[in-house]
Amino acid sequence: DQQVKQNSPSLSVQEGRISILNCDYTNSMFDYFLWYKKYPAEGPTFLISISSIKDKNEDGRFTVFLNKSAKHLSLHIVPSQPGDSAVYFCAASVSLSKTSYDKVIFGPGTSLSVIP
Amino acid sequence: ETGVTQTPRHLVMGMTNKKSLKCEQHLGHNAMYWYKQSAKKPLELMFVYSLEERVENNSVPSRFSPECPNSSHLFLHLHTLQPEDSALYLCASKSRLAGLSTDTQYFGPGTRLTVL
Image (cartoon, rainbow over all chains, first blue to last red; front, side, top):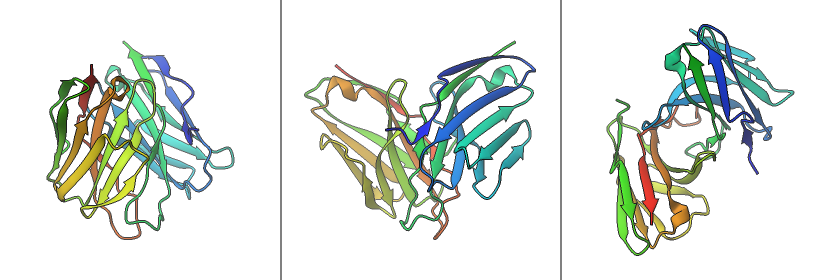
């Protein structure tokens, strides 16, 4: 039973347009969310994150929106570039875990293709 | 260069073989993770070591045996694997500040394992 869902396995977008990647979660205890990007033959790399006390976080072309009531977040990339073509993973965690580490739950990923 | 390296990058082994995957980080991190990524599935957390102590074993079969001899090195010993164990095995590390979990994980490039 997946706690973090990315229902679109793939997405194609024209260069220069907006890419919107969606993510839904089921565990209301999650209060910290991250997006990772993964190129083939490389490990995932951190892209952007958001705390549940915010509803928006922006970093350059990347913006993450959080809707806590809907348990939904989205990543917007604008303008999209061919170099953005990769697999994007949504992830969630409980930031104030009582353990000495945190447990990040990943979604299955969405493969984004930006067409020149 | 993420600072997390994994060797080998590719491994083909028979079901009766014994092999080991190696992960190394020189980022000064004190938590290390093993993940499994099967095709079209989310990253699955396997093991977590925090301050060289195993703190999470996510119902992983005993044919996978982790070892963390020091904070910079993490191994995954494999024996009598099954074909369904074929996957990408990712190592990650993180600096864990007390009470916070907002630092991100840094991933290695992964080992692509094929079990014949």
